[in-house]
Amino acid sequence: MLRIVEVEARLFLRDRLNSLFAVLFPAVLLLVLGAVPALRTPAPEFGGLRFIDAYMSSLVVFTLAFIGLQRVPTVVATYREKGVLRRLSTTPMHPARLLVGQMVVNFAAAILSVLLTIVVGYLVFGVDLPHHPLGLAAAVVLGGAGTFALGLVIAALAPNARAAGGWATAVFMLLMFFGGVYLPRFMLPSVVRSIGSYTPPGVEALQQAWLGTAPDWRHLAIMGLVSLVAGSVAAKTFRWE
Image (cartoon, rainbow, N blue to C red; front, side):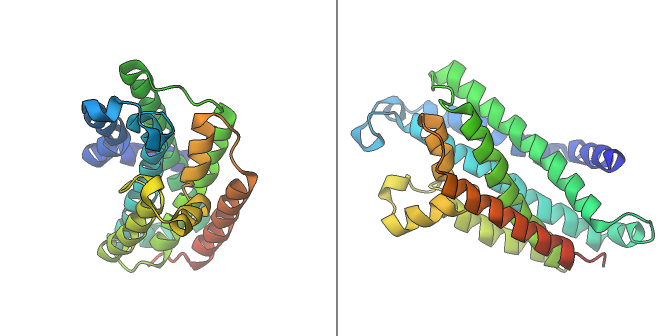
């Protein structure tokens, strides 16, 4: 298993452009948004916080969704298209190990990106560190696991890289909408906000942990259930060719 993780890590680093974008983009986006004075002014619609304070959880949503849904399915589908999986099928390796290797490497990249965004927000704009770090860690792990598992389902079922990219983009756009990335959540209808609270990557749990309270256990439980179900579906439907 360690050997698979090592190989996947090397392949991740070789794809420098996509790897750098996945890790650096949320922090760069925060720098761009923070450069706008109006977004650094406390506003009543954000509960007296600044836009950039309230938007931190949405940046985490973007990080997890981008890596889990834009990168993972495309990489695995490309392996299938180029015959890499066919060659691996002649070895004793179980497909679940390949999927776990993808999860480990890309999840490490997501955590690095989240930590970098926290550091930039704190040092450059004085954004508070997460008030409930354990709650944030639980939300990132469970929300990320659910998102990555959905990406693996797409990777398992898509016939080629183009199809994987199209399916993943559709799911990505949907999760971004529910996650309050396109519009601040207070502008969304209540039913949309409620759905987004239970949908991975779990913007509500992330926001609760960041602003000072433990995440609602029901949100975490649903995201954990999604990761288990989707992960099982991905492992059972995965095919080498």
